[in-house]
Image (cartoon, rainbow over all chains, first blue to last red):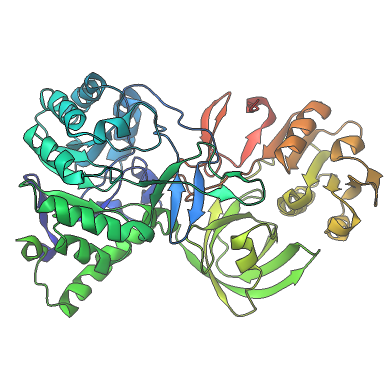
Length: 300
Length: 244
């Protein structure tokens, strides 16, 4: 449908509703529920150079209108992704994907990205400098403009594919981090990653999560995400993908009105595996109701 | 596979904290005992996974313990109300190695999936023995139902107020051909030590999605990392790596 088409860093996509990293695996789990080719693209599970098991369990906790996770970047490592996950995905998805990458040093990010750069199925590289669940990695690079720029620069040297840098809201000034990424060569930004939180079990008096803290996502974070996207999109010239708590077609439009060129859907996929499909089905009629001809007009 | 609407047919108390919920809906995706469903409960964000206790045509029986906000809210559902379910989740028990004298070991709210399993094993011609463990007499449920299926049933209670005093491991019958277990992790660990034959054990973990997307319920095994919701919840005794 023409009116849903958007452009993501020079690559046209059929629609702006993109499943977010960590909630969509490497895609094929959702192919059991619907034909995922109706998506424009999706962001794959955060991938590191070496395999990772992640954090101890429990890794999940219920919250008012949301959830905490402390998965900790469990993934089979980039080589297994290239050799096993991508070929398996090719059977069910024909479009380029966003490869989400995490690491523990700028060099490691760059190395992982260089390996993924050779893959035709990878359309964009999404550099996750905002995972709150891994000590010494991920998040540490997202909390200062200097560190964010160093990772962006290191990756920029090793790939010609568009680079999206995924930002954390757990900072005093997200705009300064966003601008540093833009100057260092990022083609786009995606935000927000989860907000650091915790829950305590009243009976045991101990944290619910084995890792104590985890990332908050779900509808509870939508206002924070809207605020961050609004601030950042006005301060940079590169496109912003908005995410955080989106679970309806109305939320998609609200996020695009805040300044997003496209959106990602995260926690909603876990509660309703058909979330993205249903949002896409509802989007045209909600646009009609609000007098929106095409999505391009929302952020021009 | 898709989220499916189920209608509450009945809900009643089996003990002060255990509830039996009968639902009606499309049960065709439930293929094996040991699989689970994931319920969307009003007022909760995440779904709640519950093992399948029984399936007969389009009737689905779930037995659960009220342990927190989600199960407390579930206990208030009345006949005629609707629940959104993802069904047929998880691998379920593999019946093929059972032999002719399988042993079923259940602890507390781990017992329900063994009912569906016992039914299927008996249908396949096996002589099924069950050891059902409870905290005390007030916690007891489904003893009669297992007997009515044709199982040989032994009950244990931790405080000795009913049946054999102690744990399920204090009442293991001689020479089972294979075992199936579900219950709290210390029980499962003790069962692996106490029962000499091979077996399968069903595990529990906090889940985000229940269908393999979020990696919230991963565990390590001798045959690689597994998701309790997808490659589990049933693991073979030989592949389990106990957390120390």
